[in-house]
Image (cartoon, rainbow, N blue to C red; front, top):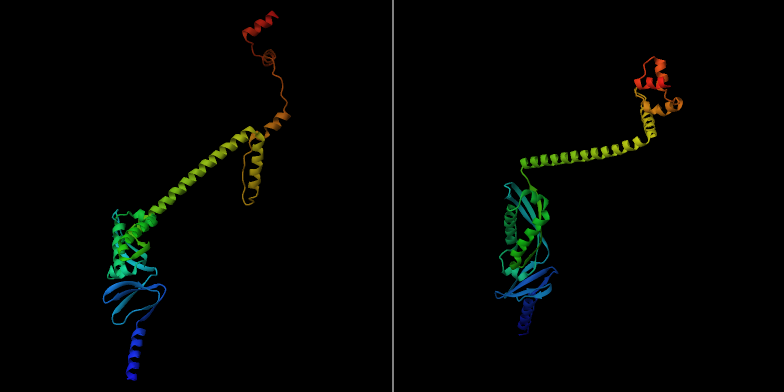
Amino acid sequence: MGSVLMTALAAVALYLFSGLRVLREYERAVYFFLGRSWGSKGPGLIYLPPLFAKMQKVSLRVMAMDIPPQDVITRDNISIKVNAVLYMRVKDPVKAVIGVENYLYATSQLAQTTLRSVLGETEMDELLMSREKINAILKNIIDSRTEDWGVEVSAVEVKDVDLPPEMKRAMARQAEAERERRAKVINAEGELQAAEKLAQAAHIIGKEPAAIQLRYLQTVNEIASENNSTTIFPIPIDLFRGFMEKIAPTQPAEPPRALAERTGEQLPAKTREGKAKA
């Protein structure tokens, strides 16, 4: 009798001990008792009655889901391949288990279709220049659809855009033409600024005659540094005008009568009449 009792107690203890479960901090267990949901349990030590209760573990960590490359035709009729990555986590374990059969597969399919539909309404230039805007649109659409599944989408990022070879060549030509345009504009702006500075320099040199002499000497000094060439440099007469005016004194103008007598020319009528009266 005692042995039977000990056996029964051992069986009860084994039954109770077999129902113990340990869940990690990031895990939750959706608890079913006789087929009905009794919510979620965890983390830590939980108890499930064997043979009568079942559980399904759900991870609450953020998961990175790769969206396979999708063939997309943009609004301006350009065929491209685009892939992306989606970051998601389970917010409500009960909805993630009861509301959808496989929340990972359902979220992946929803992300693929949303990616094709959103990029199909976007032009190529907008896709290349406004990545953040498109990522925000994708995130809002997918997150609103997966809310009933207990899944929260934290971010959607477009990773790579595969362009056709002819489109890559066209974009390369466009970029080269844009760089040439910028170079020509910068060159023209430089010429304009140089012309303005030269006009200011000429105005200053015109006011100060000695400045042209200093500029001439500076040019001669720069040319003299090149010993492997012979340079013929014209000397402007303006450099010696100051010296010539100091060496040759100014003489008073000769009277017309004396000039006529010296040269033998006839004086005008008014001048002869004045001479006769005298």
